[in-house]
Length: 518
Image 1 (cartoon, rainbow, N blue to C red):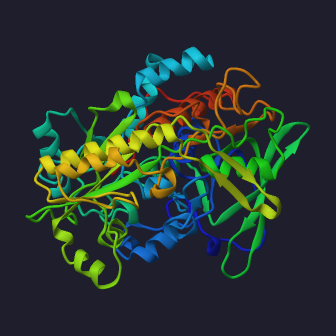
Image 2: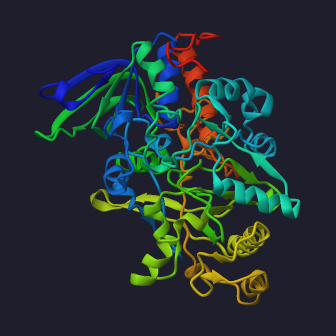
Image 3: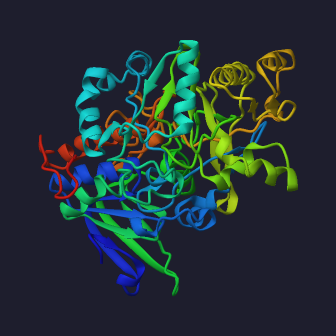
């Protein structure tokens, strides 16, 4: 056993465990809730379906790392008018291990809407401020060290500055990131403060135990109350069974896996909202070629974001990506693709996020098959067309000689005069390549029993003692990277749960040695 982490080879036979609270998942929601509950003096167990990988095992070997760290080896796709690939971490630390680390508080206008339309007064900006403060302190949310941003960010900033567009400097959960551009395959230096490097060490120090390769299959209930969990230990030597008895169960499997688990257990059906209201912040990729080297393999992911068009629900950002992913940018194959990739030093990559207001759905089909559907709307597609034109304008203002788009009918924009072609023949949803890493809203919080899945405390309306603390509880889309929002909501839920179980969360908790902010 290493630092509170228990792996299959550390145990023998079927296991029966007992605790005060059992948490399923170790990502943004689960690790935050578990640490807060353990520091309040409760006996807490975390169950993680994936494995634990120390920093020294992270590498630039894309196939190996995707297989280890992501569900389905990052081959997961939701169906719809156009397929949307999505990323979902499956390891200790969850998606926080493979994300870009952006740290944005929920915009106040969004929180005001949740208060006004959902009746969630406890989510008002002032009420959530202590939770945001605690989260940002725990994960070292800070600006990138000057000089480490890299050429991709520098070219993006140059273009925005030339046009006079408003930029926002990004805070990321990192401590002296060196700009190795390996965010998506696990930070090789340990600089990124994923939950494996922030919340979970606090959890272990408070006496918490985390079990890896535990696949939860059943939520155990008695007389309408959750009493524990059961499932399979994914031991390579031979699958074994486990059961956990607990006073409270917290599901933090993410906005896709949590509703699937509830549906497979036929729980929370009366409210009618499980798996609904699924939002994703759809993204498209953009790139540009310059005459002088950009060196995209040096630098960080999104040191800046362009907020000039935020009121329109459009967010533009640079996004350094590893060379292995760059091949997906170019509309060519074979020798032509190889020729383009030889010029990788001259390519700057970026992306566009649209604050969607469409809603998808998650369903568990017979035999456990997941059905994940999301349709990009024509309204949001018009935002993407405008945003792509704006991004092209930005890149040309920065000195690019051509721009690459995700639109099949116009994959390359050869110069500023060609931008008008996007408006003359707007690309259809069906002819556009999307992706996302933001999965939200499938177990939303509501002040009314029939308005959502969980109440203001995070407890499900239909099963007492059963809580949800992940991105699924978000009452609506937020238009910015959701990591800090997820953690703040999880912390709020954990504080309230601790109080219900007769424990108080200390006002101030000393940082674990070696994990204090530098």
